Image (cartoon, rainbow, N blue to C red; front, side, top):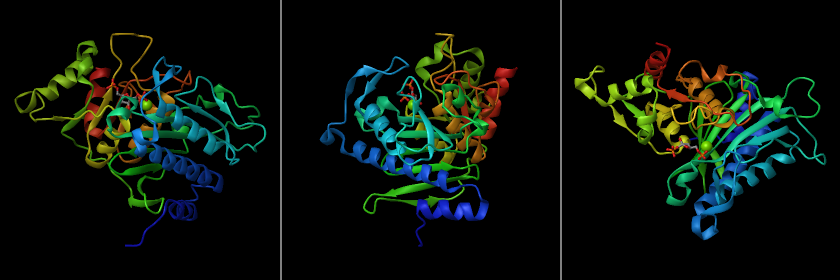
Amino acid sequence: MKRISLTQYLVEEQRQNNSIPAELRLLIEVVARACKTISHAVGKGALGEVLGTASTENVQGEVQKKLDIISNEILLEANEWGGHLAAMASEEMETIHKIPNRYPKGEYLLTFDPLDGSSNIDVNVSIGTIFSVLKAPEGMTEPSEQDFLQPGTRQVAAGYAVYGPQTMLVLTTGNGVNCFTLDREMGSWVLTQRDMQIPAKTREFSINASNARHWHPPVQRYVNELLAGDTGPRGANFNMRWVASMVADVHRILNRGGIFMYPADTRDTSMPGKLRLMYEANPMAFIVEQAGGVATDGQQRILDIVPTKLHQRVPVFLGSREEVEVVTGYHKG
Ligand code: AHM
Ligand code: MG
């Protein structure tokens, strides 16, 4: 079988669809290379002294893991010097990171969750990196946080890497979703799945059920109906899976369907859900829609939300079209 590398895919995509100009290709390749480095560190585990907790907290008040910090550094360093970016923003940094003056600046903005699924790092369960690419607003001279606050519909690329039994990179530039597997011996990304499609129907759902008592009525109703199985109102049995790494749950859904939910709940109204819009919900929503799925916050399409804060949180319902429509309908009703 002829192997198609990430570089060849990006070059051919530009030739055919004019959708990946050279600077964007460079950006994607640099992010992919950084993910390779992170994958290597993840794979070393205790041998690389990368496991365990650092003595710091991030802007969300979460204790940082050593790998959170290492992965953030790897992405920053890899992306600083190429001339393709104006600034970056990360789950692990309170404010935006401007490209230092010693390097040329480009027209793109990059946001990322450097190491998603932090609670799984030390127990050798799949984790990942999520990223989103925006264009800097026309005429921007000095990048500010405000320049990042664009709705997800403006993303020009998004993707995630999952560090599991295999390391994979799933990418969209707005023309479908493709998956690349890391050939660890050769050190190259090889195209292994073209045009991924999420089945519209599913019998599998994904939610952290330990929060059930805090859920709002539409989520209670929806999940209770699924749990009632073939004698309940849905007339079918549903299976449940929760990895607690969004990358791994979304990756499963891309491959065999399913619905992923991280709703807002009654605990803290200032915290609508757990996941962050700019570098978790938006890139995943872009990928899911490009694969024929749906992503909402219960009320509206995630990609239409106009962000007001860099680290804004949103409720997330995404995956197979029919199920996301049911639970979104319950919210609207
Ligand atoms: P993180 O970015 O700090 O790792 O948090 C996000 C993760 C998601 O990957 C996952 O879906 C969720 O948090 C799991 O949350 P919980 O621990 O409530 O199950
Ligand atoms: Mg995360």
